[in-house]
Image (cartoon, rainbow, N blue to C red; front, side):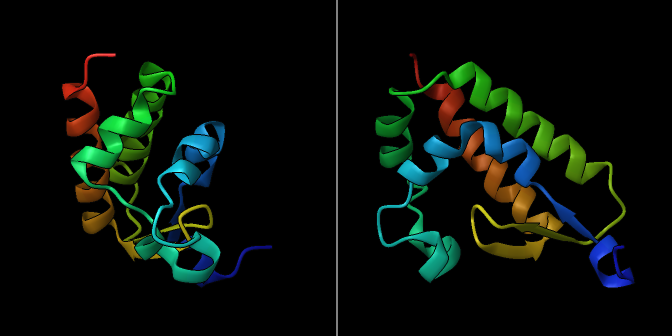
Length: 108
């Protein structure tokens, strides 16, 4: 049974799970379990280097699903255990749109 607080949070792990290896490969500074979102390097250079080893279409599809899910939800907070991060939906959408923009610019 979910508490009221839990129902006010969007959990996006269901979308990230199928590309979990990709997200873990972006952990370059530490690991998410320790440092949360600060463990990840979402720089253009690192995203471009990492995506070459993955199916970019599948990752972009899941990113689009994450963004759509968040935008269509009235909750104001987004969480992910994979990224070990909870943040406002606006900040999360901003992060994922930036990642998407970089990945779209990479010719794989």
